[in-house]
Image (cartoon, rainbow, N blue to C red; front, top):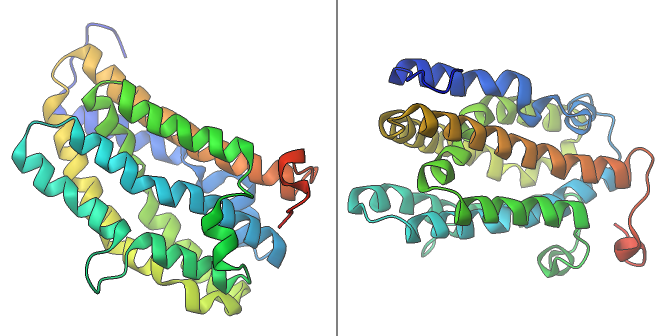
Amino acid sequence: MSDNTLLRPDELKKKLLDIGPEHYHHKHPFHLLMHEGKLTREQLQAWALNRYYYQSRIPIKDAIILSRCTDVSFRRAWLKRIVDHDGAGDRTGGIEKWIRLAEATGLDRKDVISECKILPGVRYAVDAYLELVSRRTFLEAVASSLTELFSRDLISLRIDALRQHYPWLESGLTYFTARLTQAPEDAAFALDYVTQNASTPQQQKLAIAALRSKCDILWAQLDAIYFAYVTPGWPPPSVLTDQV
């Protein structure tokens, strides 16, 4: 993409959508093992526990984005994301649903929410995401959320694979079933915003790069889990005494 080439909205949309097949974490070896039924219960526990750190930071990320926005209509639409994850009234949010998934693997709720066993690599990657939405331009912060464009297919595959290979997880799958509708709705709004508001070649390049960065962050989390709990299986000293 040349520095002085301004893409039409539909061309920018295609550029963003093309990132998924090559860079989204559906191709990570850890996910491939999961979908083939080759992970142990302990490895699934490690994934659920560490992924909780990311899940718990999603509404914080969305609150940061809201705090940077002066457009009332945008804030009204984006607020839905926080409610989806935190819950409201009698409505159970995504964070609680993820805790129940972790419990279905055999983990204790207190161990999950304490965050004391989170791998340093996972913590650094997730914190980098909060840094991204805090420090980069508002457009980049919104664009970074567009990994949701690719999540529905992965979630559909994951639900089927988990039911087939790990039937004892059935009671914890409500997080994924809810995201089958939530993620595409959220992604459609964010994609429309980015394609309509990236009005210069530089802004378009930044939006594309922000989505690539988010893919890297998701991949890095799985790298840490794979290294610690699959191959070579070397948990860092900070979690050795409380190993999953």
